[in-house]
Amino acid sequence: MSNSNPSKPGSPVWKSLETLIAVFTIIMIAAHLILRFAFVTSETVQNFPLWAVLALGGTPLVWGLLVKMFHREFGSDLLAGISIVVSILLDEYLAGSLVVLMLSGGEALEAYAVRSASSVLQALSKRMPSIAHRKIDSRIEDVALDQIAVNDTLVIFPHEICPIDGTVLEGHGVMDESYLTGEPYMMSKTPGSQVLSGAINGESALTIRAEKLAVDSRYAKIMEVMQTSEQHRPRMRRMADKLGAWYTPLAVLIGLIAWIISGDPVRFLAVMVVATPCPLLIAIPVAIIGSISLAARRAIIVRDPTALETADTCRTIIFDKTGTLTYGEPHLTEQIYANGFQLEEVLSLVGSIERFSKHPLAQAILSAVQAEKTITHEATEISEPPGQGLQGIVNGHSIQITSRKKLLKQQPEVESQLPEQAGGLECLILIDDQYAGTYRFRDTPRTDGLSFITHLSPQHQIQRTMLVSGDRESEVRYLADQVGIENVFFSQSPEQKLEIVNEETAQTNTIFVGDGINDAPALIAASVGVAFGQNSDVTTEAADVIVMDSSLQKIDEFLHISRRMRHIALQSAIGGMGLSMLGMLLAAAGYLPPVAGALTQEVIDVLAVLNALRVALPPKALIDFTPGSTV
Image 1 (cartoon, rainbow, N blue to C red):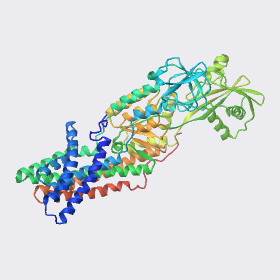
Image 2: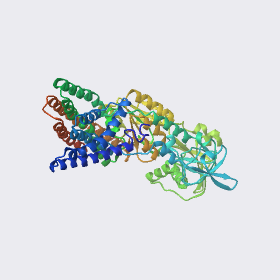
Image 3: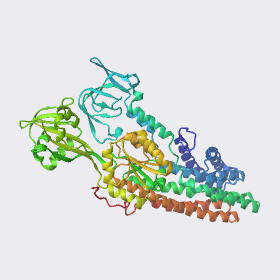
Image 4: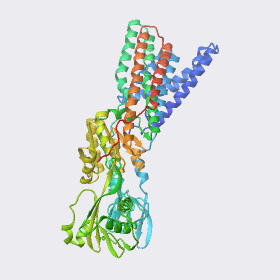
């Protein structure tokens, strides 16, 4: 990875060095001016601080530029390196020191804008437990994950993370698998249920049998995919480098022509000093910092400044389903009753026993009870035996809540009475061993989903909108119809999501929006990765942008902040370069010597930076769509 070598330009150590060089240069230039205007006649004494700047500051900066050249990275800062070298050769030490200040100061500002972040792989590793609780007879011992063998018996205590893929042997409870599978619900676990490594256990201890080695478990596979996507992450070309690609050779050409025509190499230095692209090196980072600050005030954390430069150029946006275009919570959406049963009666009886259940759909039923203001009753003999669902006695009636598969196994003759299967989750209700009804549940789409999706093309030039989810086809297509997305991919593993994002990113810049661990590889692979909320440290480490307040309006705000930053940064950069071009022509004609050229460039920098600072001023509005119903 590009920043793994501390001595390489762009690494955290190198950025700290650039900050120290900037501070040191300011102090030394001030010392030079004090000595000069204190009537110290010795030029050696006057120039000693400048020599120190060029030796201690200029040398590492020029070395860094040479390293970039070796890797064929010809950025706008190449002019600054040429200016430093030429100023030393022509004894123009003050001009060279000012260029060192320009270069290191711009890099220091950019380093300030970039928040250091730990590796996504480190976050993944830290999340997993290092030990597991192995059960041998009645004794429990802690062992390292690599010591677990297939068929070992393990105990998962409440709120622990499951260390390995396996099958439940004893216990009843729930696990949060949403960030691994894309399923939006807490999943009920009883003997015979499958558990996934990386899932978070609920309030009950579970005893499981290991079905795979740790290195073969689901979580380990996600880590492998993550490592692949991190190693092959596309390198975004910075705005300053794109502009510098034509500005740098043009400036060198003007300087060479001035030298050849006049026969004076100082003319070349003067042109180089005026040409030093500080509107690129300073104004653009200042605009980025201001935009990062504006975004932070609106609960949007920008971890990678490149995302601000890139987002407005993205033409494809890819959404995960759960927690992004939906709220990630099940709701009771349909109640179907058999002949002879009424809504209020059945809901009252079901609600009376669901109060005692840990099933992921229990809260949805209780919410419906509360919304309908249904009266519940005292329940007795509550039980949830393996394979039988939830059972209880209410007002002398036996109540059983189970699945279609389990009911047909018990009473195959009732199949003709059941409604056809549909998308979403369902539970079936028996009252006194007689089929009474079916409840259906769905993850609720966000109310502003349709209006947000439909405005992306006309307002943000998004040409392709995609929904890529690990959830089932019926659920994904239901949501896609609700929000107006035609390009749909369902039942996608993290590996498949990564492949889709890589294919799309190869064609155009992409934005990926997700919130789960299974989204992390895709977040890294996309041109811009946006994470909803802070549900997972892994996801926030993988993302370029974190939306703290999970809202589609915040996505729109980020897109507008990106566009505004690009416009103001380009104004500052191109306007500053235009003034620099005028200064270069004057220097080429002999009207601006090197020191005067450096000072002129500083004035241009101030104007460019003042314009760039406008980006931090909040505009009147940062959204351009009207939230409406998806229904």
